[in-house]
Image 1 (tube, rainbow, N blue to C red):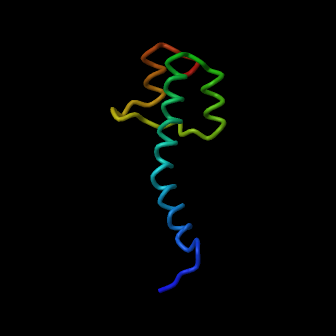
Image 2 (image 1 turned 180 degrees about the horizontal axis):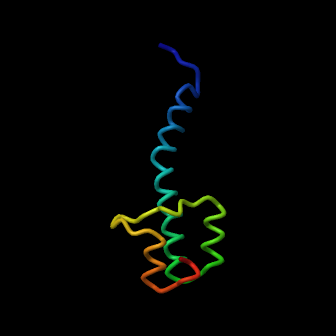
Image 3 (image 1 turned 120 degrees about the horizontal axis):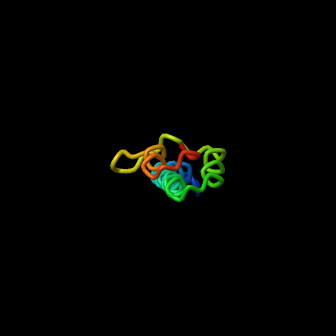
Length: 77
């Protein structure tokens, strides 16, 4: 069966989004966690304003709030 060139591009893009999307979200969550630990309130606010999920958690279930509280960074909390 002859198919026009590029017929599978939407399917390939969909698969890439499924594979890369969570990885990008995970990296953004890590950036938020690192900023909270560093007490970088400016970076925390920038990431939150950009739409990073404030409830993002790591593989141990720790959230940004937990990191900030453990470090005693009240302004971030």
